[in-house]
Length: 97
Image (tube, rainbow, N blue to C red; front, side):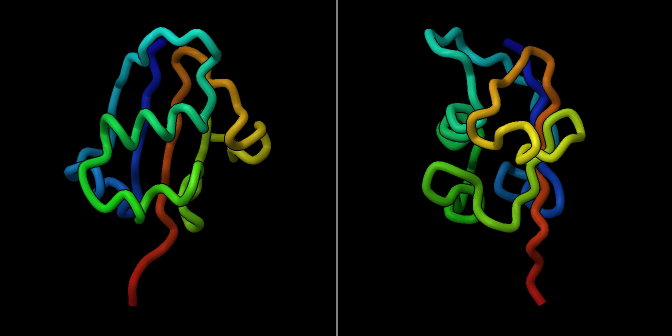
């Protein structure tokens, strides 16, 4: 399954400054959910400071998640079943001062 992942608002700094990843997820017995995807991102793409991106089984508060430009919370958040060709964006809204 092909998915486009995008990171912005500073979140890309945790991924070697790479803002976009066009990935093919491995075949899975169960449907891919955002929760499974976050684990996969942590294990395969995240380069540093996972505590700035992941908290428990979810993203850290202050990271906006959009699936095809819609707020993931409207779609079921962690339980949303990822579809082929989804565009999933992670945007950090937290900034130091």
